[in-house]
Image (cartoon, rainbow, N blue to C red):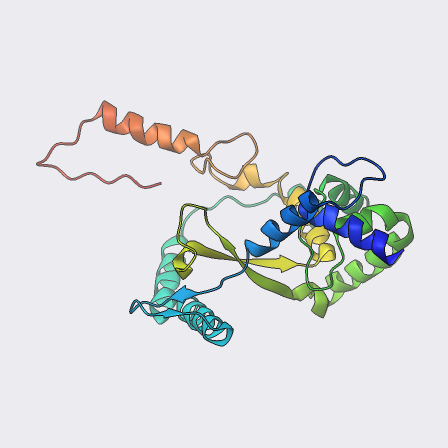
Length: 253
């Protein structure tokens, strides 16, 4: 039985789309699995001074040093945020009406189930290793307990410890880029499936009211709008009014 599970695991990890029932775990599956896992391994790092480090300890030290520097708190950024708040505090910013407020704050019922059904399979699981497929398969069995836990989180205004945890990993930005430079790696956070379900339900609810409070000039990330519209408008503006060397122009987007 364990051998069958291991074989099936290799097929899943290889992400092959079509398999034949009874098909053995061939070299094809194993090579696909190996190539997929090796893509996230960093064997060496070239530091800013050009020195290359290859030991696991040194590589981990450089990764930690790089992202501690990149994401450290910036006092200048605090000042910028405060200036933005001062600028916007007296503006007439659109607000939700009472009906919209009630709709966004209403108790969640079947929205959680709808959110789960809309989620894609085979996404990377979080620290607990439980995939979305588990919740889809056993939703009738776990739904009640899930909803009790979710409503308790709403009451205390915080998620459970496991729902506030994630595994940070690095993914390479592209095959044509050097794997030795940390600038060519992007960090992502893998959260648990229950956290993703809640986030999806909240996103689906907010999607209904966002168009009424986000100005139409914001062309991206809203259903029915396309960020390419902003690019086209910039091009049209430049073409309509050629830039005069004696004058100054500013385009903000």
